[in-house]
Length: 215
Image (cartoon, rainbow, N blue to C red; front, side, top):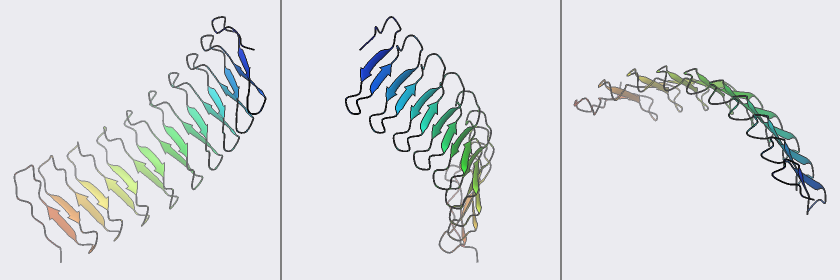
């Protein structure tokens, strides 16, 4: 049985695999669309993307429902994790609200702020379980990222602000500091093998490039 797509009445079609009926509403009426899952046999319900109401879809792997809000309404989007079965929530990128996503490996949530708002972005470490925090690249504030191998944090400055960039060595655990190539200041980089720093002048400043080992 199929209804009129212009009248706004629902359309019902039987499933060829499970034998259960599939019901689909009119996309113009703004009413939700419900479709049975061909794998689990559980129904999938999807709301109207124009009405701003949330869209709910069952997970084909875990069988748990996935709910997604309208991207235009600015409301958060929630999606269940297909591996752990725990929900993942993501905010609207246009509203400037933070985006939170659950970690599928450690089970701890990962929270990420909007890159346009200038607020810092925090992401949990999937290996050590410690959080990684990253600032906005547009705000000019430094970016800090934890080391997944040594568990020591890595801090990186903004390349647009002209301030030096400092990055920790993932092998020796000693920090590596790099100056801005646009500021004309020298760049200093530590050796990841020996742990001794290497200093290199900026190629844009016209000064020669010099490398040395600290003794």
